[in-house]
Image (cartoon, rainbow over all chains, first blue to last red):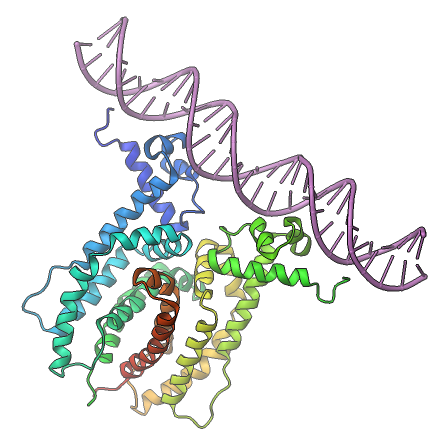
Length: 207
Length: 207
DNA sequence: GAGTAATTTAATAGAGCTATTAAATGCAAA
DNA sequence: TTTGCATTTAATAGCTCTATTAAATTACTC
């Protein structure tokens, strides 16, 4: 075929992505990846040499996607409240489109300190590009007395906590509470609005 | 020694607990447990027969602890707000005393469906004993117009999200934001209060 | 169609893991 | 001191996994 973006390579990457997202790095074998991709196990190594390389391809692809999700196009005319609502909802939608991602990230970063340190070094520009502009807007609102005093880091931790834990826990919730896929989707719709309400209400100024 | 609660067995259990909490079931080998416990690898199997048994011993011990944490002694005189505050703080303190627990639970329940189903069957009485009494109080407050309309499940999801994700993410936060242990402890103190504020504010009725 | 390079396969080396076994050691009562 | 039982050790069977290799097959070029 002489590589018109080698279909096999792509198939392997997709199989790996599916399995890594389901079970993490350690519990996924190259043999299983090959089985899902419908090819010989040696081919996985032929295209990616090591399992580690293959994992990094998946991981970096996903990390890039998250980063893109954070660099949202800004809505210039909107009020702060409207901007914040959209930020929360965009973050929520990104997670909903990639529900296995929180598990993968937590699992790998917590069990593999090297990966964590490498990530930190690749992330050095995030504060400047993502956090600082938002920080300025937040502090302006606080100065105007529109919202209570809070750091941008606290607000971010709150958004991430409410949005991420839902997707992390939803496979467990699904079994424990015996929900079908339809009910899970309904829950997601509902929690998206609930998370917005919680955060907006929690910022109100009670002088 | 003829077993005055076999010290070796206990040492192995502690080593296993430490390692399982750090790295989960799959990444912890009985060889490594033996190394940390300072004994021969075969001894791990002599006392617990299988790695699975050993893991269950650790897991059940922790699960029992969590359950005890949920069955709080009630404060009969307190207002609903005060009771809720204490519930959030107790939950937070339990996690703080066992910061590795959320990782262990998520990791094992998400990668091992059997364990999840077994847990569900052991948990059938939790709704009745823990949720229902709280549900009654919550609905009474809503009826009185003291707080906005919300289900007890939403409130619980919010509490768990805010409290759990902090401890799940703190090892990552520690590296990314380059915090020392003192700064982490300060962050925990602060977030405990912040989580209470967020939840109480989010329940306010805005008629 | 021959030749060449890319792709795919089967086979396996080498490492690590769990669990078992048989033998060695420690201890306490008879 | 011997006997019996609990504990500990060394050795290893049997398995799975990653990665490599050499050989086979396919695709493309001339």
